[in-house]
Image (cartoon, rainbow, N blue to C red):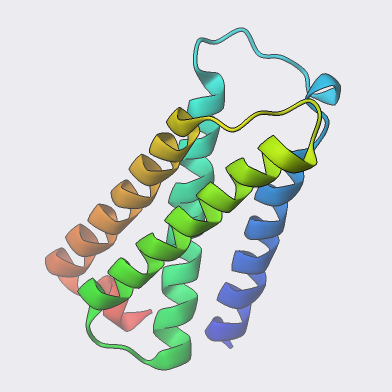
Length: 128
């Protein structure tokens, strides 16, 4: 049951990221906070990494969190780069930005660090 919920949430979240990152930039309300888009990328990939990690952990019943986290981080990196390439080549109001990829990675790494920390503290991740 949890596996299915994590899968649906991960797919929904991934779709939301794609939609919002490829949406016409002129249709998005501009928020006057410096580098706000980097914060959004950070949050996108923090949640993305958490959800896909939890789904894959349940799906494959993997006990080695470090290997699974490495795979999930690679998935997040590839997904983020693919989004940037789609922004560059498939839209007219967006461009690729290496700093977006860095923000994505920071969010993904914080998620991985939090997973390791929570699991080391009380094994919560292994019990989900």
